[in-house]
Length: 406
Image 1 (cartoon, rainbow, N blue to C red):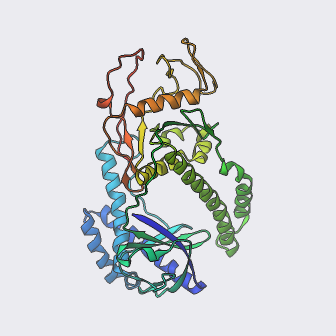
Image 2 (image 1 turned 45 degrees about the vertical axis):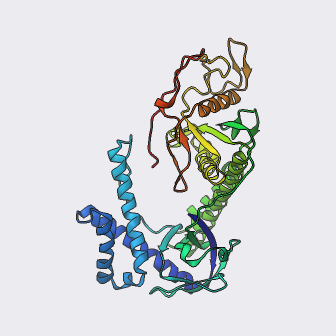
Image 3 (image 1 turned 120 degrees about the horizontal axis):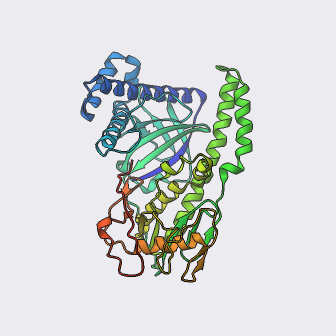
């Protein structure tokens, strides 16, 4: 599934109609969630049938396309099913009980195969539901002529701080060819260097949030001084949102380009299976970890690995930085130590030593079990039963905890 995005250009009245559609979709989602909490909605089909009841009970809700109402009910059921799965798998901590949502700066509503129409030139999008938002011009670099209309399964309208966007979900499997390089690399992510590979190459972290922190604080102070409910406060909130949106887009662009480079440079990419949600609990490092976008980088590595046919292996991170990559002995050291010095005489940068260990664990992998990236099972984890018995000087077999993606 590919997602193409284009900005919608229209009038102020048209944007107001889109806002009404967004509020109606959020209303349907929250009512479907309440229906589940009250007891009757125990399945996805029950929530879809409840959309028809809402359309009869609230005439203004009938203006939203019927498939769009069902899509919002499916979102409610997705939150419910995620909560059920976390309970069944006994996930530690909060299980993610479904919550009601309020209209925020970022909101979206989905149309399936009806409620919208593309022009013959594929540069104009018309919404044909009861809100009558009209025709919008599409601003973007993607050309929709290469795909048939039957391949467009959904059209999602997204509101952000800088405007309204249309996302086209296209049923297409992306496959690209590349020449084998004959190389394998292991990646160790960090804060001093974004990552260090097993060959000793390092990449500096961009730190987009740190660079924009002063401007963000300034806009936040301006927002706090505005009177609640005033138009000035609305404008200040949008300016503040655009600042954060710029940081978000910079970080994504960095992760996409770096992940593609890493995948194109090797035939196998091994990396740590880090639990980011646990790492950010360390408050002194939480902001730096979030700014580094390790998980986003991993998602794109897995995605490009599937596109280009490159093996991507997620290995357990236990003791990868403490184990000597030469002899296998444990060398205890703090995170602040910048030299790996072993009794066998090995002297390495600790990040490169960890990257070599990560690559070795990745090369031991025999079978595959997936972790999702963009809806696809693309990466591999190292199974505990797939680790060969240790016959060298190494005295450690890594322990593995298998968890399903949330």
